[in-house]
Image (cartoon, rainbow over all chains, first blue to last red; front, side, top):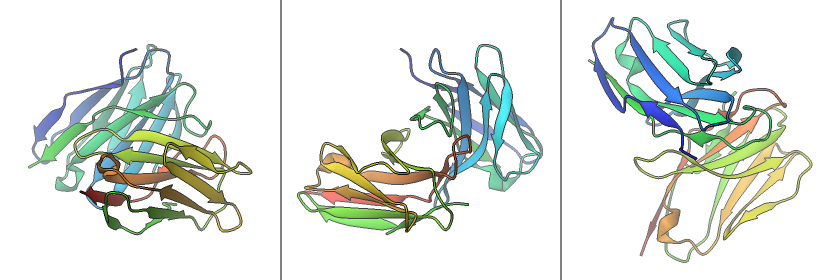
Length: 115
Length: 110
């Protein structure tokens, strides 16, 4: 099976712009979670989608949003970018989702730089 | 609430042992451990459930003390391949989000 695929691998944006990141989970996996990784802060949970519905949400402002399509692919959108949004954004997939004692399979991430 | 990992960093020589701790102030349902090598995606190591027993994975094992809400990851006879950042993730109850700690960086040299 192919692994979790994230596109694009790198993005450079300027403050105020918006950006959309994409994540294709492993075939058959219905849950997709998103994490923001910055040096010293670890992996901070953004949100989790399962069967096109947001199931869990972290403590991020409303500028961060996501959605999931019927084929389980997920997108994450960040509007009105700020310098502090520069980070590696990781998505992870699992069969039934976070909180069901399943392991997560992570993608390689999208490195976002905001100038 | 983010779990607290300690130490923040460990430097070892091949063959030495290390322990990484993960603590929470809230009751936990499960603890997950992942390792991330530089420039790569985090990779699953193991899950420990409330009421479960200690788990092992080659020379890496872990325990979960429910009374203390603490998990420990044991790396014995470390190898160069053990180098990376180790993250613990905690679930407060089934169905909730997996929240990760800030990570512990392990460096193993020959």
